[in-house]
Image (tube, rainbow, N blue to C red; front, top):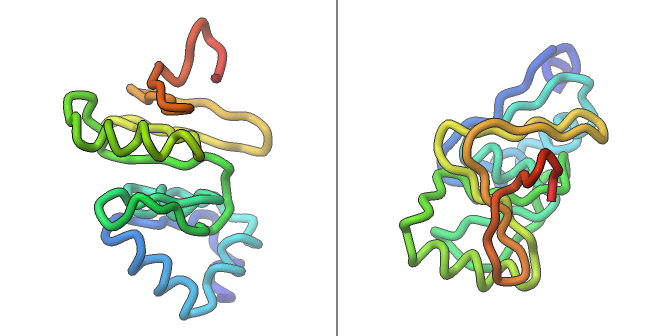
Length: 138
């Protein structure tokens, strides 16, 4: 844990989101990651687990408590043409808004500033729209 406190950057990589979060918690790394002054970068499963409410649609449509580093729930590797995943997200979004992120996209959160790149869709209340409209975050 001392290494996390000394690090300038912590990477949470891909894999199985549930197993990753279980490992982080079993090793007591969750508090160290959340308290670190380092930049925390999440890729795929890592991005899922950074959220206050995480979602692994491959395993279950039920959100679970993530690390709470950001109040943004993400679905990485999203493809608009995948009607099965879209249908599941639309249903889940009745209770929890979701940022459906296509490959090669990213969300950056620094304090209260949020910026993004790539194709990201806002899924909320059973509807889908671009994350940004007219330069405004929805």
